Length: 172
Image (cartoon, rainbow, N blue to C red):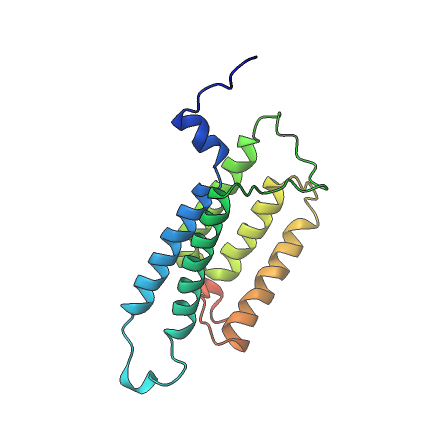
């Protein structure tokens, strides 16, 4: 009869890796609550539902979910793999795609100020499509430009969230 191998801290953590998600949710919840409770609220904005209400509810919800998930994991609960998942975990990660997407997002963050959202958003959408494998060089830039303009108009005109227009500010 063989005895089971002794449990080390590393193997215990590997068996309970979902606790990392619990820690992430806990940190996010504390961050959201701290930010919401230290928010500078004008006296005229006070009322039953003010600008702090939603962040406080979301932050408290994150803390509750973190605690409930941690309790479930420590009682032996495990997440099940999706049946329809077609990811081969034996294959290495596609770091080229990750690097391209990271570069596209960083370029967007740098270019949104001088170029405005319509141009930098179009570059973001086209660059993301390219990084994810689309090679329709005639169609993708047109779709990206259209999507960027629609997003700009929805946020700027319909929702009242001002986005930088850049050099196209007078034209749009």
